[in-house]
Length: 237
Image 1 (tube, rainbow, N blue to C red):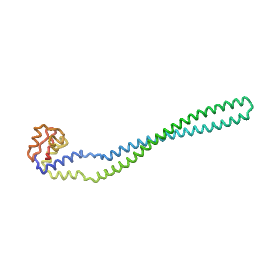
Image 2: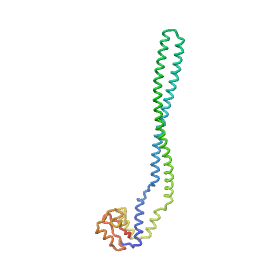
Image 3: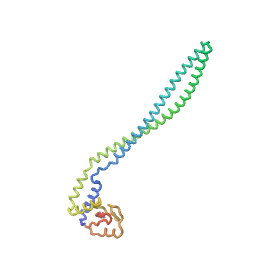
Image 4: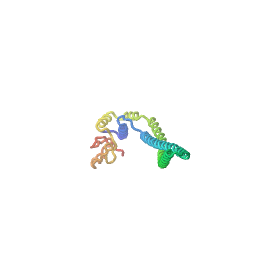
């Protein structure tokens, strides 16, 4: 295919631009994708922090229950001692002594449980602090990523419509060139590509030395074709 040297960069820009459009598919904004990923991670951290807080709350409730049971048993212990001081009936004293022993034994058990609960709640609170720090870091990161995503969205919205530029480029090219270009583009999805000096910028194959020389030595207004994908090769130098 023949095309003047002045218009060859126009054809290459057209091919690159149309290829970048992906047949009209909407391109993902990387900053938005990163922000969305960070939001998912933040949600996971919040859930983990919420679970850690529930574990602390449950253990604190358990400590309150143990302390309430202890207070009742302490009162029971005092009552038994007071009644023992006044009781004279052997059977009554025996029952009171048995109950006092049981109360003291249960108090000892509760004190052991309370110590274990305090140790556990301390570890749980430390774990909660770690989760809290992670959530705080995530919130700061989210704010930065949110601003970046918003800026990228705004930049994308203000970017000139590529279809306008595509139309301008097409108007500069002869109809027969566009027809041949479209025929190849329908076959390989590229149409035209840069000759990299050694190979094709469309399929990225390295051409044999003889074909490389043939491309370099072709007439200035001639667009050779890649022997692999068929794309028209535009020499940049």
